[in-house]
Length: 100
Length: 225
Image 1 (spheres, each protein chain N blue to C red):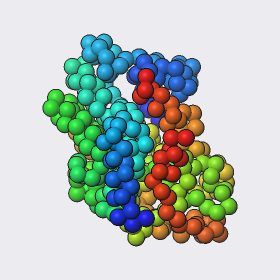
Image 2 (cartoon, rainbow over the protein chains, first blue to last red):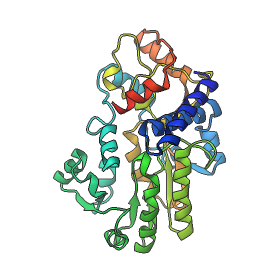
Image 3 (cartoon, chains in turn orange, cyan):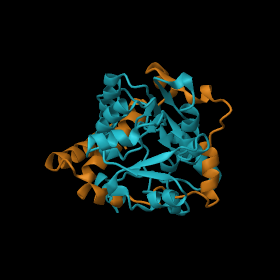
Image 4 (spheres, each protein chain N blue to C red):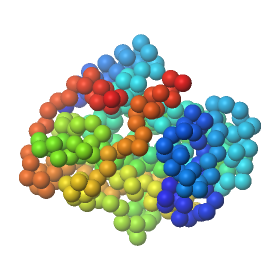
């Protein structure tokens, strides 16, 4: 997926939001494409940028906390032990609350 | 929540009335957790009263409701909250110009600074649970919120990841720590690129991930189904 494809998707989402500011499809489209640009095109989500922006590094503060690595997560996933996100709730539920 | 309960016995859940009957809320209530119903968009005095006596307020509100927190911040300031952890918990990014979601959060942070309310902002990068690709055998489908096939850009840009289950463990440490007061903190387990993730999955499963574009319209349908 190239930057121009993402920009096109983002424009589609923006059009949905212009028509209806509460459009969930528009919000998700905007958010997911902005994440893509920020993470994978601009490279904002890095420890170097975090430190530039003044963040403290939790790994330096708490070296005794051993986080679950992505490698270990993949092993759980392969073993069938991962859990689907929001399995006790759903985006649909959030949508219903918004309408209420 | 489990991690926070290990550091204090006086933990309550502030829940919007619209969410009172959600299974997650009921599950917490059945475990004996105190549930306080209050609407940040409703009666300000009632909200303030609900917060009196608490030291720390952690907000984890849904992505579309960020600005609702402004009233929550006002109430927290009036109630004398000693540390607010607003709903951050996203990727690291500059305050504006890139992500609308970040811009909404920054409006809330500005309100915190307006009151000179003590705070800690926690960002967690992206989650492991949203960062693995679909494999041709379909063996990962059971745990996938929506299929992931596409590599964005060159695939070589690194990004910070935290396992969703570790957020609470980190937050429990962070909110007890005077060093993090009035600071931003980022959590992570990996700083990893999309191509590195593809190579890891291929090495562990022996399957070749097929990268293919996903139309944005399909993506929306997958998300709201």
